[in-house]
Amino acid sequence: MSKHFFGDTAVLLGRSLRHIARSPDTIITTAIMPIAMMLMFVYVFGGAIRTGSGSYVNYMLPGILLITVASGIAYTAYRLFMDMQGGIFERFQSMPTARSSVLWAHVLTSLVANLISLAVVMLVALLMGFRSGAGVLAWLSVAGILVLFTLALTWIAVIPGLSARTMEGASAFSYPLIFLPFLSSAFVPTDTMPGPVRWFAENQPVTSVVNAVRALFAGQPVGTDLWVALAWCAGILVVAYGFAMNTYRRKIS
Image 1 (cartoon, one colour):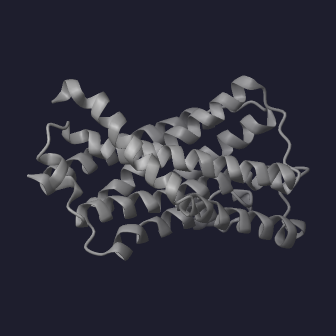
Image 2 (cartoon, rainbow, N blue to C red):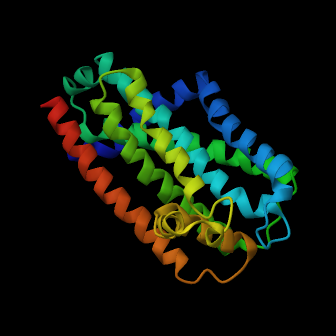
């Protein structure tokens, strides 16, 4: 079956993308909440927040991008749950289809949908005054980090998508992930936080990812934040992939 993996994944990916094309409201909904947050923080709270940078939209955009991804992966869990409930997985198992291609099709669909949502949020940020001094290599690095971050969170989403008992349970897991950037350097510098909160903020993955993307956007030296961010994303991706595949094998056995 493994020799058919790429062809099967491509066919199933096309199926999932057609569903997305027929229901673009999922992408719109994913982008609306981060855009609303960006408008609120910049135009309501931005004047009261001191970040040491010239433009608050430049400072907080990396965090908004991560919230966009965290919002988008909830739909991955939802689509997986609906396929499980609809018997789609059993139908594919009766066909000469590579088993893991079904999951990879959902994961790649999530990646495409989230990249579109990120592009929409970036466009709104530009209209709000976001400016970057980054070169081509820095922009490619930002894209690479966001892709890796999206894949890591998407494989986390696969687990509840396969194992949840209700539709609400399948997507509710994303709420803590959406909240996590608020306990990081995404919106305010961590040195303004009280001791225990500051320790947590400085030692969780979102802060390193935010700091790396922010430095790349500004055309500044990234330092160790880039490698810490990549290590966090890669580590989460490997662990989540392992748990997701184990859950999948148990479900279809």
